[in-house]
Image (cartoon, rainbow, N blue to C red):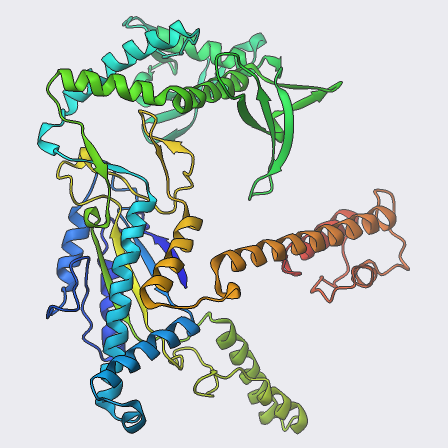
Length: 576
């Protein structure tokens, strides 16, 4: 079972109209009248389906408190494997057999084929319903039972303020002081001439603050707090300026990291981060934080970092520890205060009935223009046409024709736009980012299946997040249970995931070996001194690597140019 997620790109449009239009066009291409369905679908009840106009209206109007630049919906593609589809087909055939509509005598009967396909679509709809229930459960979220008795915005602000005060006192008793970052209420503004605006982002401005001998650094300030004067100076609140001065000083002051070094991790963008931990007697578990390699200085075995970054990392680690260890206590305080004020904050687990989603079943696929086999065939056909026009080698033409990719089911040469052979039933699901149960946008739950938030928590300490691995595993289990499917180990997500990790590890080993040999070669033949004219560096490195790579064979202009070309080739052309 292949399940994938696609986020709504709000930068293109705040509406789902383009997606709905695309799915409706599929009907025209397939000469079908397939409608949308949702959680209310029942195979025992006659249904005419749901029109795309209703889907568009419901999804677009179900918004939370996010701005229009954020994704408002997601699309799930649910595609059973060939073996899973074959199993679904056998179930449909058995059902038709029970009704006296036997396959042996009706295999070519168009009505029989249509009925079999409809039964498979029903199976797909029922499976999608169950899968969306698991989708809801996997978020681990709670939803309010009585929205009418929830505090409004002003009341919620007061509740949070009182909770923070009581919780702060509770933490003080345990020796934990929390930096609330409360700004002075002073209205005094000052005029300064050491500010330069670097960039403006949303409601903030990135400025460079120059303190001369104390150093300079970039800091963020609210746009509304800066007033440009006629003489080119800026006015801003004195308390804000003083806070930013301290931030600049901290950024220009190095501090020793007194935490224990744990290990080094490599991020997806290849940046390295150094992980540290320190035991704090106020907490059960050590505080942990990570610092990017480029922000660290290593001197005589000690790690140094700017005072500002160290404070920032330490405060974040402390806050995470507080949320994890004392979050439930904060929630208890909040609930007690709310109950005292007459509010009802009782919740229940979120289910599939709280989601707003619409699904659509499709029974065919086409080869896209960028499909690997379609692209390769196009290139091969171009070669064949060129050879035939010039009366080229017939053996070569024959070999090229034999190497053309063909559809496994139809045997037809694959070209962009052609339909794929065999059973291709799959589902598209458009699901709102927000629940449909809460009516007030501020009370709606924001749900993103793409957020890597397995360890995230709510404001009051409840653990939340979407574990995609668990969801894929559950998707298999639901299918196997619902359709009594005997899944072999090699068909499981766990097996596929393990193979993927092993292949990735092997690729990393090969890449490391290739880059290592490239480095050795460059040090030997290019160094930074001279290149011997009799040496052919590109040919030699191809030989040493033992890989047929598309490394540039044009003569490099110098050692640096050669190094650049080879490293670029290794990174891009080898394919690792």
